[in-house]
Length: 617
Image 1: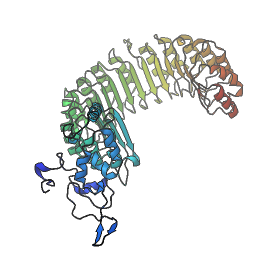
Image 2: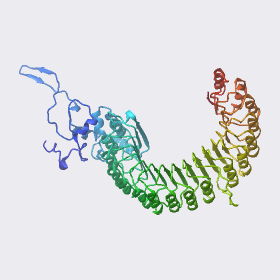
Image 3: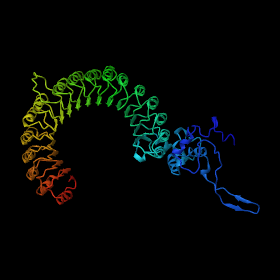
Image 4: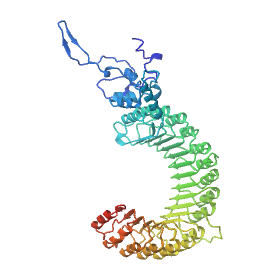
């Protein structure tokens, strides 16, 4: 018997080693009447209640046979010999003790067919079971109070025989019994097929838990860490060394992750990198610029310790040749010099999004545009030092690939009288969006009409300084035909613009948004009904349209609207009911919110009659 219970060396009951490196960790799982130290013999005999049997010679106490009397090491040997995943899942439901044991059995610790006797049926069943294990197409998500070690253990056991766990998302934290290294160890041992792991706001998960994942999940491809302050460079280094397939790395607000971890991670074949609110310096950006040879998508946000030099070195590192998309937000280190270097060092950059870059000016934007010959999309948001000179200069210098340009909340935009020489138009630009730039007015729109003749999608939202005189030249110079037009919040546009638009572009127009255009009346709806046969989405919310305008559209036999919004049109009443019913033959969505002249009973009948249409009221 001494050999049977020899727990050291080659005679271990479990060849995989002890389940717990610290015997106190079982308390995360177990809730039983007596303390049990896994892989240690019982130090005290359990007290067992049993009936007393009277005989002439003595009282004889008989023990009740129970598998629960066995120590954990014996149960472990039994459970690892179960024939298939369904049996393991069923046994995991017996108790927390059994669940904890099963969740800590590695796949290579399960007995093979040769180690335990099986019938032919059992052998066939296990072969079929193994065929679907490890594929990793299952996805599981835990949030808030549900994010516990117990649930992770159940996931580890339950998904093994049902395709294997491929994606795991853990959001939030359970303040009393949150996720710890014990739960992640269960995932690491039971889910070797894991490819995507996302950990958000987990205060109790540190380097040890991440190391468990690194040791067991070598197929990991995407790692997303957000607000995990206990994770340091050490944990990320373990992932970098053990997960060669890691291509997608997102690190956000993990205050203890610095340059060292990113330097090591760069040795992987990363294709997507997101770094947000980290204490990294110019060194990390230099490493990304030098070693990020496969990086195609780069996001840098709130990197307060990165200076102009970091962006300059990153651009000149000559390693970002495959970079296609770059987003920089709230990085004071991005200056004219750094952006110019990025343009020169990233020849395949197609999308650039700059948000809250206070030291970027016209000179840097134009210099970048001259170098970024592959640029297809440019978005500038809250870059207040950018003026019309920089914006139009970038359009003229970006080359023949630029298709979309956007300006959002750029307060530096002011109408300037620019005497530009005869310039080649930006014929590649198809989409232009100017939102909430109060200084962008008629003078700027005149330049748009002159420089952008191939526009198809135009968004001018919240531009109160734009009038008919500024927008009409845009309509006249657009050669390709407008498809989507958003003029929401342009309070100084009138029916004259809509009439001209429908006459010149009614044959291509599909989406028209006039939300908040208070000078738009029934005349515009009549022009739309007469000319816009392809129009599918119309929004005239908070305009001056009335029942007569709805009637004009209902009389059109060629109008095929799918979405109509008249929210806040106080002059549309119950009289429009039959016309709305007729329009509803093609409508899939109708918004009549805040139309106070339409009674609720009328809306109820509309809902009943237009059963295919989603109605907001």
